[in-house]
Amino acid sequence: MTDLLDPINRRILAELTANARIPITDLARKVGLSKTPVAARIRQLEEAGLITGYRAILSPMRLGLTHVTYVEVRVTDTRPKALEAFNTAVRAVPEVEECYMIAGGFDYLLKVRSRDMADYRRIMAERISSLPHVNATSSHVAMEAVVEQGQLPLTE
Image 1 (cartoon, helix red, strand yellow):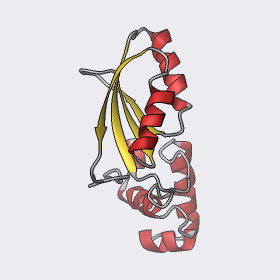
Image 2 (tube, one colour):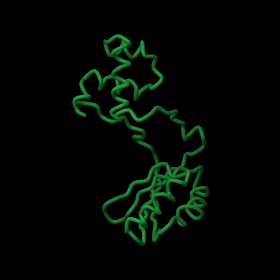
Image 3 (cartoon, one colour):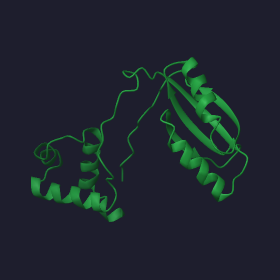
Image 4 (tube, one colour):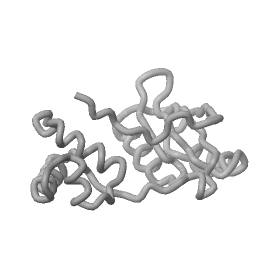
């Protein structure tokens, strides 16, 4: 896999990360190759699974989702079947922007977006607290986003 991450492919990935809609001719010019080799490299990066897709990134602020809360979740059962039940259910909660299983003092960390505190309280009461095997939660409200949607470092 590291063979694919030569300096040109790193530049291609950096450019696509910044603007996935960049025309292939502009991308080729930026990385110093012609269109055909750049297109072949992109196809190779996609086939290798380094590029997994392209998507529109929506502005949570413009959508009125200005309230961010991180929720620590402790579950009552950590056997595989119980964890899978939680995982499946939490994926269906649209306000959960991210969910990570954590090694430490709690089991999961959720990033929840909402309009305001009242909306968050509703989400917590109606959705998160009723997820399978939830034992306890602890909420941490974000005051300001310092780094968000950061790019992966593609340095050598």
